[in-house]
Image 1 (spheres, rainbow, N blue to C red):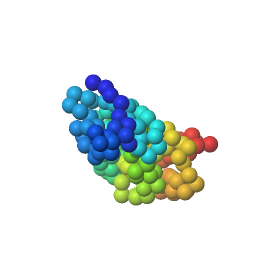
Image 2 (image 1 turned 90 degrees about the vertical axis):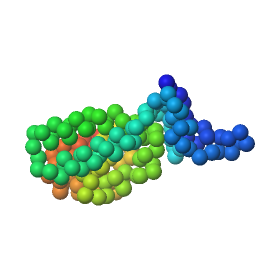
Image 3 (image 1 turned 180 degrees about the horizontal axis):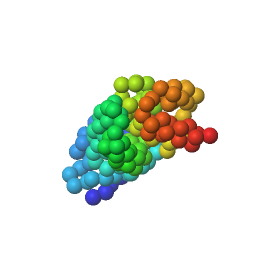
Length: 162
């Protein structure tokens, strides 16, 4: 089942005040996907149940894989995670994930290379969000990383911004 949800308006109570969002009122039983309106930007986008959860699980996997010695098996798993995450980025944007946790926060830490990679994939799709500060940090990460897919992804994001 499919529905449309405006995060900032859909929880109106019968008294006309906004209610608290719960999983049940955002995705009632039997509803697996929706058009969600970003509460920060007002822009709408398609999303499914478990979009954020699956992204977090894949970031954790990427953190592990990207922190280990490079191998063909790791490279294949990293590519598989990227293939799963990339189509979710527009949903994460619609949900406001990159407004609640801004890209600068995603790329600030060296201890979560998977989180950095997901931010870079996001910035590839939304290059208008690359500020001078973000570009400077990405160039720093690119020069320091030993993970080829991260360096290549950064190059692509920065190239998309030109």
